[in-house]
Length: 330
Image 1 (cartoon, rainbow, N blue to C red):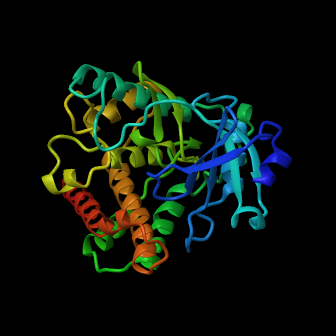
Image 2: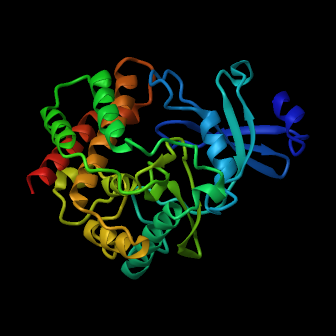
Image 3: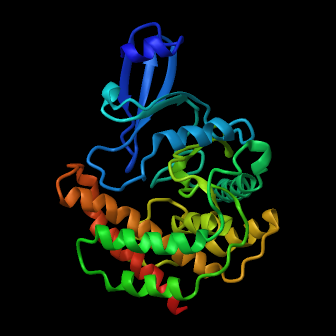
């Protein structure tokens, strides 16, 4: 890639590119130049969601954040010219660490104590992100916290309508429930908006040590309790219905991991924040996640992507909606 050689001094040698295979949204590639390694991020092909894959915005937040929050990777280069790669993209440092997806791997597999320590580290790390001083980081103007909750509920409801391919009555009823019970903003903080286990890099020798937090495309300034709700939406636990567990993307139902109640309690203890109704934020997280997966499924249905992994999202969206409706009923 001649562009890299011209704009990045480290990229003077032979360049090779390899795609990381697991992402569902922005596309991520490993770029090797001689002995150096970088990570390149670009929007997905065929997306129809305006503003959802803003590479410049992701680059800007990391440019400020990595200095005050070490798990955030350091961005190196941003290109807004779509003629170079077909879309804007940015390059960042490669952070090293172990990624845990649907199945546990050593040293976490069969180690409940290690899973419990990791649970605590994840919650503490989220609270640490929410404690970042916005003024010191130069991020005070990165979002609009006033009216954040309302914009999220109204925005995700509209996105559901725009991307709908099937009738899912639970999504309609849950959307109304969220709209009728909107709380006031609890605070303003930098929020990740997709905080989950497989967006963590862990030290393979000590998996309680988080070496990186990835995928900042939805980061903004907003209500940290809404961010907690998003994290909870990925957090399955052992007593969840089998149908919901079958769709779980994180192995947090394994022995040793916190329950969702323990996540909420630990977050409150570390952050000092008080939640009026934690279930509201959990239901919101489930609703939002269902919409995100529906948007991806929409692309699959309309032939904008041929990735067969996305075919199963039709079922996953329904199970998320049903889990949200069960939580409302409780």
